[in-house]
Image 1 (cartoon, rainbow, N blue to C red):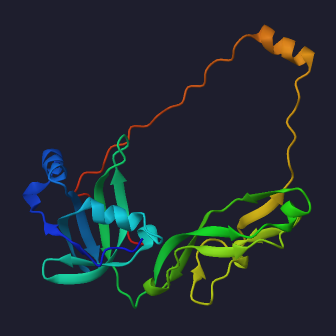
Image 2 (tube, rainbow, N blue to C red):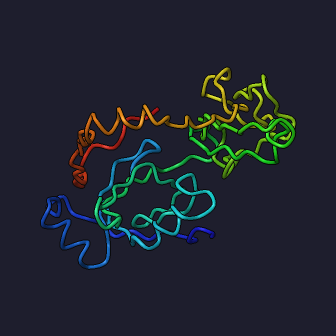
Image 3 (cartoon, helix red, strand yellow):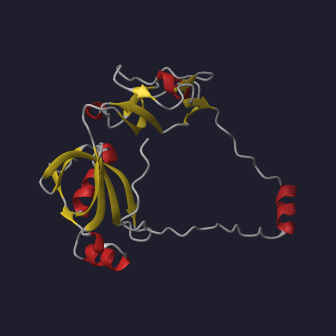
Length: 230
């Protein structure tokens, strides 16, 4: 799905910051956001979460470059940070960065494995993808939605690495080029419990339940400092 042509923003005065004001803003159908970058002042604004959601769910996702209108200024921008309600999954806050189209930037893009590996088709192995995204550096207009890599010749004993990914000369890999992306692994057979093992397990009693610690996710309040530039 293509991104909206222009993301319209509305200014937020400094006095509008705070939990109560953020709730009122969200209740009105908008969410707080900040716009920064390109050696210009950081501006507190509000945006339509539906527009932002369409961008995040487009083919290029958060790497999408789109036009943003901030007052009389129109600029290219990207989504760099976003917060979601941990229970409802709704957008709570967005950080937008102005982008200079003639300056290279660093982004992470997903890796897609294409084809049926020979190690799976003829050797009975399993294709194991170790790395699912790679950090690259390139001009904003050259950012791919994903990087496709052909694995049809991948067999046992061969490891596909970052250096093997196609880049067309326009991309520079920031991720270590020796890092493994995928390989063929053997099928692991499940151990069959013997009668004696089953009896021992029954005598031992039920296992203690595992306690999983859950951290509290607090939505970042608007007005927070923008993330450090890379």
